Length: 324
Ligand code: NCD
Image (cartoon, rainbow, N blue to C red; front, top):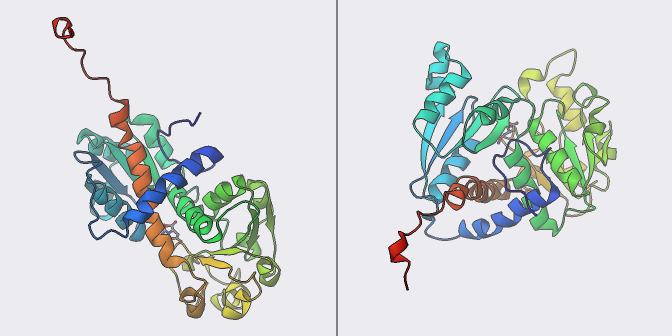
C-alpha cells in the first residue's frame, strides 16, 4: 500500500512507488496548464505559507502560482524584509507564521536540514523548496517528469550531470531519484567539485573526469549552474571551466542523438552552457518550468488538500433522525 506523504522533505527516503505516484498525479495538472482558464477551487479556503529565507525567483513564483491555480491563498515571507534581519530565530519566525494558521508551509533555507527541523515541530505539511546543499526534491521530480515524458521511460537511461556536484542540492536530489529508477548516472566536473566518494551516494553512479567520456552514450544531460563565487584561482578559473566543462554544440554531438539538455536555472549562458545549446531543439529548459507547476500543484493538492480527506468524520446524526 502506498504510504501517504505527510511532508516532502527530500527524495532520499521516498520509495519508488511514492515517487511514481507524485509523477502520475502531475499528469492531469500538465494538461491543465494548457487551459485558457487556469483556476481550480480544490484548495479554496486553504492558505499556503511561502517562507523563502534564501533568494529565489522561479521556485517561489512556481509555488505561488501552483497554490493560486488550486484556489489557495498564500502568505509570503521573504528573508530580506522579515524580522530575521533583526535577529529573530528561524523557529520564532516559523512559529509566528504558524500562529496565522496556514494549512501548509513551503520553505527554502540556506541551512541543510531546516525543513526537517520545522516539520518536527509544526503540525502541518512542510515542503522543502531547497535546503543548503542537501536536497531540492521538487526540482528532481520535475526533472524526472520531463525526462520520462520525452523518453517514455526512465529505466535503463544514461544521465550525465555536469558541474559542481558537491555543492548542488539539485544534483543530490536527482541522483537519489533517478538511481531508484534504474538510471545510470555519470557525474563530471572539476575534481574539487566531483570528489571521490560521491559515487557511493546511490547505486549506478560513476565519476568521469573528461567531459567527452561523460557525454558518450548520454540520453539526457543536466547542466548545473556554476556558482561564480566558487570559481577562483588557483582552484579553477572561469576560462578553465569554460574550456573544460561548458556544454557546447560540438560536445552535445558526442551524446546519443536527441539527448535531452536540462538546466534548473538560472542559466549563465556562455559559462556552463553555450547559448546555442540552451536555445536549441534538444533543450528542455522551458518544459522544466511548466512541469514544475504541474509537480507543485500535484504536491500541494496531495499534502494540503489531504487534510480534508483526513478530517474527523462529520458529527453523527442524532439518534432519532436515523429512522428511515
Ligand atoms: C536551483 C537552486 O536554487 O537550488 N535553482 C532553482 O531552484 N531553480 C539551482 C541553482 O540555483 O543553481
